[in-house]
Image 1 (tube, rainbow, N blue to C red):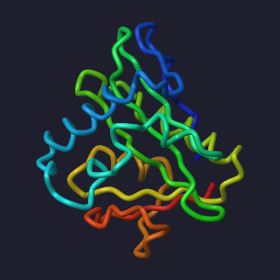
Image 2 (cartoon, rainbow, N blue to C red; image 1 turned 180 degrees about the horizontal axis):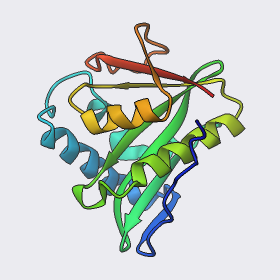
Image 3 (cartoon, rainbow, N blue to C red; image 1 turned 135 degrees about the vertical axis):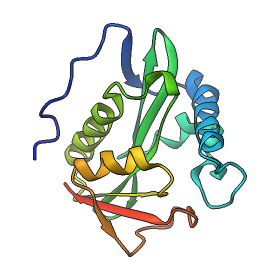
Image 4 (cartoon, one colour; image 1 turned 90 degrees about the vertical axis):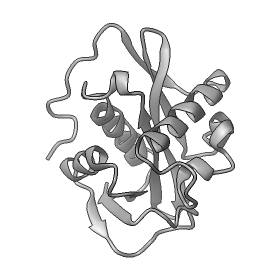
Length: 169
């Protein structure tokens, strides 16, 4: 299935762009609020405890990395990143949005863009770790061709994430 098929055009009040230093705190708060919303805040082993959470701009400056920010009416409302984890493999990271942006097809668009970047960057596989509590994300990943795997790839530090998925690019 072609991932980009059936992507809705972006409404005029939504912008997708590369992360900037000024986005660090807004994105950290979006991620923390999402974990709180799903009852996961304070539990160890999830991405909200990453040391880079409040410095995402810096974290995505290495070769083969990128982070996309979505704005709704000029307000940072979420994002998604790609980063290398081992030779031939990248990881889809930190796909989180404010409730105001959910349900508009933006997550799909952003993951499709991230996967296209991963292919162009020369990755063979895209890996992700998540939790079953994030049911909407699991559905999206399945639709986009991610398959469940049992073996962890790389050392993400997200040991609480019980759902592991992989997609051949």
